[in-house]
Amino acid sequence: MSTILEMRNITKTFPGVKALSNVNLSVEQGEIHAICGENGAGKSTLMKVLSGVYPFGTYEGDIVFEGNVARFHSINESEEAGIVIIHQELALVPHLTVAENIFLGNERKGSTGLINWNRANLEAMELMAQVGLHENPTTPVNQLGVGKQQLIEIAKALSKDVKLLILDEPTAALNDTDSEHLLGLLRKLKAEQGITSIMISHKLNEIESVADTTTVIRDGQTIESFAMSEPDANQDRIIRGMVGRDLEHRYPERTDHTIGEEIFRVENWSVFHPTQQEREVIQDASFSVRAGEVVGLAGLMGAGRTELAMSLFGRAYGRKHSGKVFKNGKELRLRSVSDAIKNGIAYATEDRKKYGLNLIEDIRRNISAASLFKLSSNGWVNANEELKVAEDYRSSMNIKTPSVIQKVGNLSGGNQQKVVLSKWIYTDADVIILDEPTRGIDVGAKYEIYTIINKLAAEGKAVIVISSELPELLGTCDRIYTLAFGRITGVLDVKEATQESLMKLMTQERSASAAGAGK
Image 1: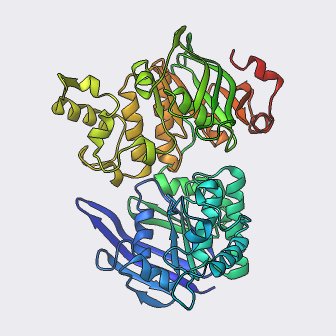
Image 2: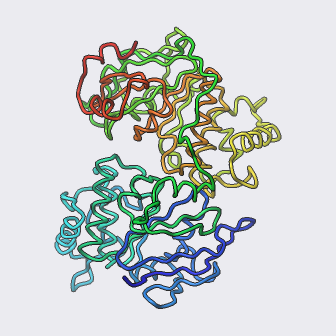
Image 3: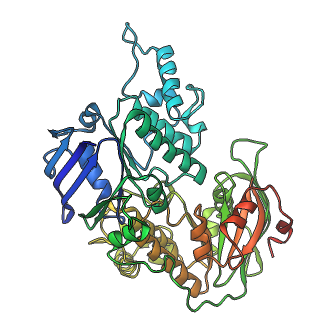
């Protein structure tokens, strides 16, 4: 194989921070090359340098693509050369059709200069077939799931005659089935079209499965690159390179593990879809959580986990809510998010960038956002106290930033997640719902999040963890409820649960154990 890409001594500096320091990367033609590293290690920054998001002149070092030194001044120039990047946050326009999104900025015009819609739709169908997507090209994108939207992004890349495809956390928001389909597609593009791929991922099992070569980056520097065919090329080696140490236990041991009385109970909770009048999304869900207990909610994509959590959090989702919610034996009437917060319930959303944070605001203001009543007097916020609180959380949560005045949008995913948790912990909630708390963050940051969960439980909080990763639930929870098709289908003590037993409950409409699921 020949070398398609070399990045030599790449150095990128932001005010006060050296994000990349003499990073070197070599990618062979036709391979799948994985890049691993903790959040903030510099992976995405390196790819933004490569794709022209950070143009030539804003970094030091050389990019050599197909044997020629490349000096990309924009993302358009890198795409013209055949380099296409798909970011973790998909760049699709939700109300446009599949075909319109595929050819956005690259429209198929007729002889009159107007768009030839027949040509666009036919070519879109051909590209969709290549990625295994069998939808009508006139379907609006917002009617499709995240997995299919990811395939549209790849079809869009193929429309630009891609030679090097860069995928930033491509499976972070996908379920196991969609993830496996996407990885299979990368293999297919490599085998049938010779397309080279660079994949940034924190899912080490997927890297083991699909990557030919792995490069590890830590603190803005290249640690090592190695072929995955080497005898010791495994997850442990990747972790050592990423965090600079062995993680003997992926999940911290629970200490001071005392489970007390029931704090939170939900009985026969039902919710209807916000726009589809007859669709019941959650049906008669019942469960409970005790003080010092970590309870998991497991389910496949579309099972209703997030919908259940959001609807309980002050009816933030859905309509026609029915059922009862109790806290410390007292029935609650939670008609708004404010009601939920006032009654000691917190919800850390799965989508931290859309719902959990104000990305253009600083860390200080984000941490105080849900608790301004604690910082205000006569309608005025005590700015000095707000700053002190933020500094305390920066230290205790190990948020890696030089200042709490830093904009949250400039932080890595793991540090953003710590800001979200800080915001809700500061509310002094007794019931804390964590929806995909480690999505899109690395193993080192995950370990820190798990430690925070253990600390909350040790303080007597009732913690609910929603996760698509069954090993994560098995490693952090005391009990795990399963959902399928909007129903609670069972509950297992973690000592008795396995991935197989959970999956069995997650794929059936109703189980005999569901009758006692709320007990």
